Amino acid sequence: MKNLLIIGYGNPLRRDDGVGWHIVHELLKSSYPPYVEIVARVQLTPELAEPISRAGTVLFIDASRDCRPGEIRQGRILPQPMKPTLNHHVAAEGLLQLADDVYYARPEAYVFSVGVESFDYGEELSPALAQTFPVLLARVQEFIRFHLKASA
Image (tube, rainbow, N blue to C red; front, side, top):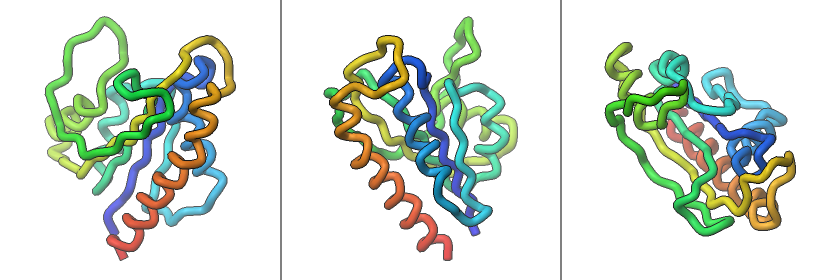
């Protein structure tokens, strides 16, 4: 079985920024086989390169400023060199490159992004994201089902 790692990230105290975090917490209410690992993070950090290296497939779920509010985009992502920053945050593509550089691992990787309406302080999603949330959750669940069938 190829391991599946799902990483939902974003700040749940900044409204729509937390959509990936909220999706993961919804997924954790269900039971999955042990080769499906689901984690929530406020941000992506270099420490995630190790669990990424153990996965056959990685799915990142995040909010995006590059989409209209509530618009869902999904696609494959590839490793890219990490850009130097003054904080601990890294991009998903940079983590994939780090997993390759350190652990010689190159899992398939995908991202589901959803356009945000608000980064204001608060725990609730904006109306646009609240409406899109069940659709995004269903797409992620379908991705998991597809992976489970393909790995069987």
